[in-house]
Image (cartoon, rainbow, N blue to C red; front, side, top):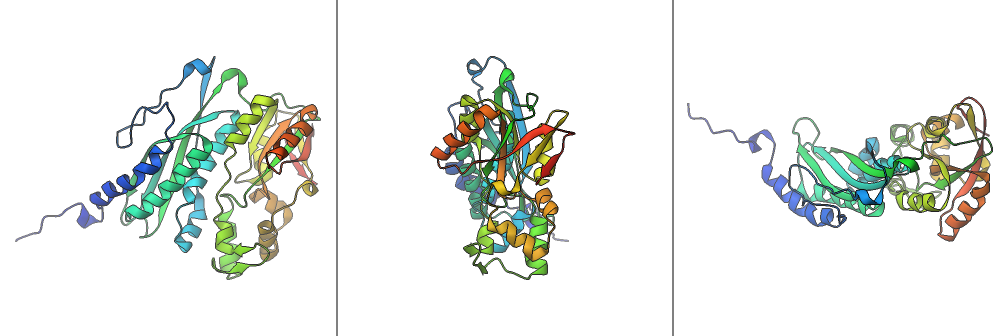
Length: 345
């Protein structure tokens, strides 16, 4: 029997598309390089030379995350240039909670069929996120997995590494009753709670991504795809000028899960719900899905993407400085004696 030789492409993997994707990504990747980067893309590992002279006792801080089902919105809208920002933000916002400066980032994109232009758009977003965070995109992987992901769909995850001096690690251990809780605003939903969001808007209310929502001032899809804010630059400046005792990234689990992670034993946080204006998208979710308020604070950031804890002597000065920079920060609560709980009142 005469059989046609089987190629890798016959099984659904196009190696040439992979080469083309790398070419399209190169300009975006190189735009993120700090002086410490020693390698170009395409090697087996990314090399980064740590400037140990800047730190007495350097400690590396790492974090990894993805974008979750927010990607479904990108698929529905066929818009792929912002989810990379989300991926970077979810990782670097975690490591800055220890006071770490983000150094470098690596991404992993898996898809059913690799389209070079789409992959380049995703990485363009990753590069934008890295530039905003001040870190370098020094490596990554694009995996074509036919039969595993539907055509047109993909997943993205990332890994960030930062550095902090051991004596300057922020771990919450110095938090005391009377300390002030400061909230930095989010850009919207960020990258959490999208399984609930999709159930409410698309499953229950039958709203489409292209529908204009007057209270949002944009289409539903535009609101849902707003990229996660990156707080690295703001936080790094603050820790140079103020005593920041604790930092919490408000992600999945909302206030009730994330704030206790920075509290020492015997401390509670009281959050005053009226101290900031909750963005309209959260009201829309709550009203459309008839969601209990505690469930909202357990799932979403409710307009506060990052929380800082400092002494009462520095709270007002810190907020004033942020306002001069156009940051709508506000004091949202205080630390009290307790059992490691968060109370929203």
